[in-house]
Structure formats: structure tokens, C-alpha cells
Length: 261
Picture (tube, helix red, strand yellow):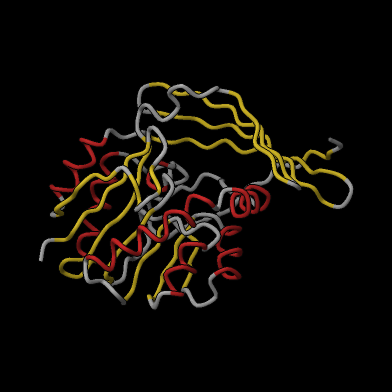
């Protein structure tokens, strides 16, 4: 592929005196993630909506953390919910504004954004694992769980998934993904509770491809530790292996945590 080297960096920022954001999901990667990896959200959406309705949450505000390009926000607004979406990547927020124009959106860190009173909070696709906010870790996550609990109305739900220590088990550490106008070379390395994803990204523009690079760092969490932290924050949590009919990949654990009435 003919290409000109161009390193894309997002410049997401968030309020709070302790927040230092790493670059992540610049323009090229945000575009590719939005069009090339939409299946996760679109296949999960029916099951997620069913969880909300079975809990008698048929309307009201849902906070979508790590909203990405707005696909889940769009599904929520189509089904009568109000949405406040947050993502650390301004490029993702720009896409979300087109995809889900009825949602209220903001670029920032999930750790420091002001959470409004709501009926549900969602964080889909390893959102809580990423260390774009350098302060992200076990202690900050425990504080965050408490803030989510306090923002939810009685019997409100917190639905999210996290990557665990076996996220890359059985996978090749170097692999390609490609679409009609893009390609990504992914190289992964992990140790203990850390996972690093280094990506070389190619996106077609005109007759040539432009190249960018991103490195994402994730903290990995054991499901049992997440359940314990949720209980300490005041939730009644349960772990699930699927969002409806969509089963999660190996190494992903999902949680449905209810604020006690």
C-alpha cells in the first residue's frame, strides 16, 4: 500500500485536577472502529434493551459512557430513551453527533464527568479498562462505582463489560483486520493485569493510503474483584455471559448491577 506517514492523536480532555489524558482513537481509528466494528453494539442492543425493559425502565435518561460513534445511543433514542453520551475521543464524539443527533454528547473522561440523575448507566466494549485517563485503576474504579450508584435512581441499572486476565488467551499476538478502505495491523502484549495493543492503521484517501499509529494500554480485572467492588458501592450485581443472544468473547465479563431501592 502506498502511504504517507501520519500519526493521529486524539486530544480528549476532561474536567478535574487529577486527570491526564493519553491520546487515543484519533480520526482514522475512530472511523474504522465505527464502520468496521459495529457488530458488537448492534448485536448486543436487542438484549440490552430487553434487560432495561424487564427492569421496568422503559424511558428516562441513560448515560452511555465510552459512547464511541453513537450506535448504542442511536438505538436508545429510537426506543424512547434520552441519552447523555461521553467519550474521551473528540473524533468519536464528532461521529456520534451525526449518528445520534438526538443525544446530548460530551468529550471527556468517564472518571471525572459529572453524572446526572439517570435510570441507567452503560459502558460497553471494555470502556472501563482503558487508561486514556492515567488515573484509571482499582481505587479510581471503586470511587467511580460509588458515583454511578449515587447518580442512579432507585432500582436503576449499571450495565458494562470488562476485559480480564485471559483476554488474549489463545489469540495470535500479531494479526490483521481489513475492510474496503482500511486495514489494521494489531500487535498485543500482556503481563499480569496489563494489556497493550499497538496498532498500525491504514486508511484509504483518494488513490493512496495514509498511515497512523496508536498504542492503547488496558488494565485487566478479575470478575470476582469487580463483583466485590460493586457490592461495596451499594449495588446488587450479577455477572452475565451474554447481552441477550450475543455471547461475549473469551476474556470479557459483563455485569448487570442494580441500585438497591
